[in-house]
Length: 302
Image 1 (tube, one colour):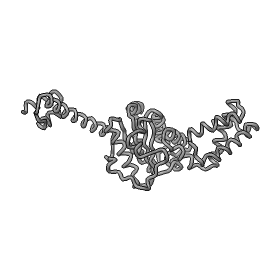
Image 2 (cartoon, rainbow, N blue to C red):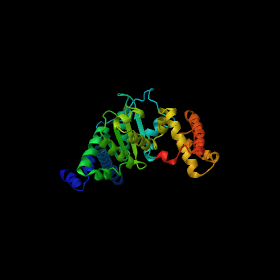
Image 3 (cartoon, one colour):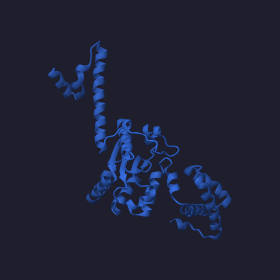
Image 4 (tube, helix red, strand yellow):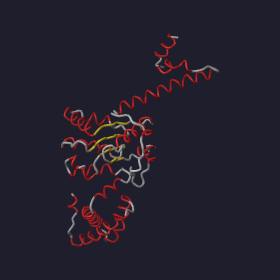
């Protein structure tokens, strides 16, 4: 028996060497099939275990253990099934989990990422602090490009606990660079105890924060709409007005014609959200006046 098991190991049939006795013999075809299934199952288990180890989970959680409490709010268009079925990975969309400490953000992110590993998706799991340290260290050693290259085949990156520890300028810029390189190529899950409006306290730069959020929410279901809601109308209005004014000026179209193109674009991005209808109409009016008076120039956006 020992010789048989040794030959199996020599042939790299470790699963078979361990469990071949469990197969019952009824006929030759059935017996060989069962032996092969034992080996295939063992290889699949080992492959998943390697993927989980490579992912770098600092905590192992499953969806079966996660409690979907009534106070967990999902924006319109995003469902529990969409996340659990990993459809967002196929669509290369991002998920952003926000909430106070103890609301289950890390559990849900880790559980979704674990299922992704189990379904053969390449995953990497970082805390924001550990990722910042890796990026800084790699950059100082001149090996940052190698680290970025190692992420190219990864399909899902989890950045946990963004907001717990402020990042210095270099770390924030490197994280922005990494997230930018993931743009439209892979999915991200971000967990944070802060709303978008508080991210500038972590990243330390308003422009970088705005650019980072833009990268994330562009492929995050409904998150763009949520980001807009957090901004006051006084912030939204000048931005939309400038955009419409520049559109009119560059296109060299009458404002009435241009408005027909302007509204569908914003509706495709934001949807028919009542909170935006009034600002959009006011922005159009302001922009039309601005175009005629040349008060708004394309350079304003630079």
